[in-house]
Image 1 (spheres, one colour):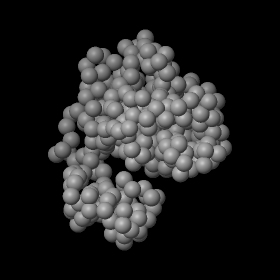
Image 2 (cartoon, helix red, strand yellow):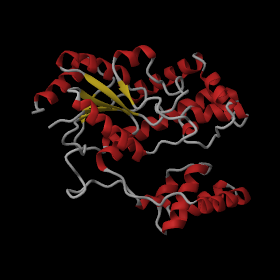
Image 3 (cartoon, helix red, strand yellow):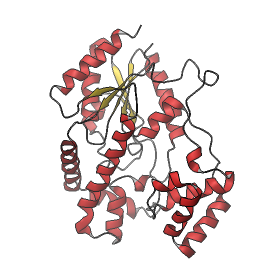
Length: 322
């Protein structure tokens, strides 16, 4: 039995507007509510740079897991999986259909497949790693990580202090590389009637066939963000005094580049191009993950009649609900 529908896609592919339109389409059929699957939308005070739904959009359809965490406090994939499942159960108990919508693929994996247990943070180990970095630099520690955990090192920038530190910390505590703690599929012993998976949560994947189309939308959206006062938003966050550049919230695409520009570590004249490039890289990673899924239904995001096709897909899924 279908417990929810999922809509995933790369950044700027049109997920928000499509999800709201689908929820409105379902209103005469019992209604739907949207559960955000986005690691940036959880943070308060980060509206412009996250392309957060507008007040009117949020009012048009009930949304969940948006503005639930202060940027000072991280929000893990495990916490998301717990909270999202609770939302699915609550929405379903009220006779409505949950729509899981977003582009944070780790969140989808955590919700559908579960997470392996990783070692808890150890302040003493972390302090030692920080001291080593101050003495030798993060690129040097990144080189060490390449030897210990080449898989993880490959996807990290040499200056990605937060993630390099965590990868080294995990290795020093457990003796195992971070990459060995992979997401695992729930077994029949660990799964239960409440578990979400590909069989009871059909996934609609927004995948443009023309990469230039997506790139243009990314550029347009970043330009709109800047015009709406994105730099003022990041300035206000920095002025709080308790937020640092290496916090997960401040490492979100766009915010990281804006923070560096405001600190003078990135020429302001390069902010736009660097932000656009980082967003393109994010979209590329998202599409790579989506294309690895065998059971997704593909919707051509840059095609014609996208909404009509999406509604047809939704209706077809619901016709098999019972």
